[in-house]
Image 1 (cartoon, rainbow over the protein chains, first blue to last red):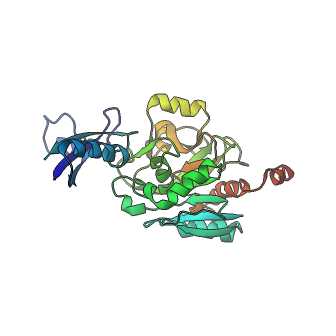
Image 2: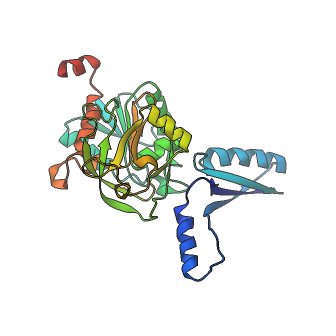
Image 3: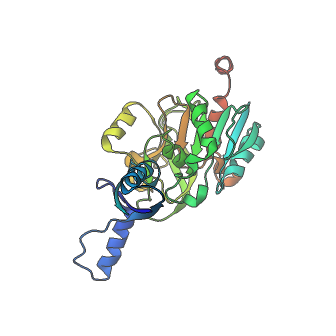
Length: 81
Length: 238
């Protein structure tokens, strides 16, 4: 059993209206030190009967095809056995 | 000639599209369930608006894997006319049939209001017979309609003349305030390279009868119907 964690975020070049709104809210709450907020998505993918290496390959494919839209998003994968 | 209106779980403009095409424009129409994989007998496809699969993951992201989308992709590759409205547009983007992706609206809010769009091209299945530069008033209803594409690709899209509709003021002037969702280059609708697949965020089917405040959308759907006619009929019609 392997667990893959996938972090999907908007590319740096893409404006994030939700992150901006959260940032504005934090500013109005007085968190002056918060310079920026970017919102993303987090997925936990459990895989059975595969090695950590295979899990990474499959998750990579899933992230590219389904979990992230490459036009606007990028992703990062962490795999633990 | 039969127009197929695809129904996904969560489509909510399918009956509006059916109504206008059948009862206002007098066309043969049939619903195509998303599990269908056979489009034989269908001469044009409409992907209606709504919230397919609850907009889970991303708008249109799950719907693109429906069996019907494989058939729609093959249909489009054969040159068949495909029109995507709102969520239908988003599905076509996710399926890779149209460029770009939709970000959350610039002001984050869901927007439900009339907008004005300028017709930029008249050589597509959704704008043939319209006049370049004319302005149509139709409603939008979306949370994610903020068209995004990297700058170099936007330049290429423009150079290829694939921006079909743009948000403008009523007089056709580009105006940042009129670009309510913050779309790149005020893009409201685009087409594929072959110009037989068009997506737009405003809803023509909700503005096709005067009782609804505008009948401008009817012109877009009439263009779709016109695209069904064999070339000889188009020539005769002048």
